[in-house]
Image (cartoon, rainbow, N blue to C red):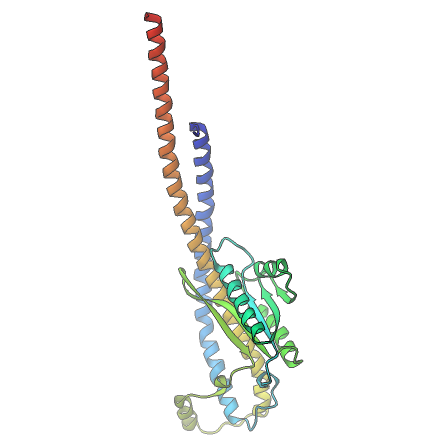
Length: 296
């Protein structure tokens, strides 16, 4: 049975750990608020980018020569897993890797090759541990991604697709729903879907009201410049969603850890009180026994 001193040391250790988890929870909550603000600020830009691309595509005589719109038989698929650089975030990293490995098994079952790209130290270390060959690993920015980070990832994907080293690109990431819920999403980003360039009925009516535009340079050249920017924007949005999901998962995990620490301290305190009471009772019995021996 643990002594009172042992229980005191355990309680002191758990309380120190609880201070750390509480601090991490507060830090994650602050970072989550900033991440949500960045996502909200980016949405109007992404919507406007979609409208602009659709308008230019309608004015283009042909878009078949654009590399990022080319479709071919899918033989090799690039999987881009967006994980975190740090742990202590519940199942955030595990569910991404589980989904990515499931996608890989399905693709290989269809006779397709898979190439891996990964964002985050956790994903990179897991793939290396499993002896996977990683085409490119991006690290050091998962908790606060910048647009330049999305550009770096998009540039490598564009190279692979334009050189026909891959025929399709799928990004696997956590879509932020709430601090308690992060939904794993598999999004195909290359080739760029035809739906991106199709306008809604409302947009067509607006174009008719505005009249024809004169493009300089030609619409095809403008669209060729916009498509890489669209890919960068989609990846940046996925990185922001992943960052918000990581902060939300870490905040929830640290809150649960603090709650568990409180419960464990309560149980140990009760056990310590019982142990102290047992020691006091034993000392009283010893005193009584000694007194009986003297008087006997």
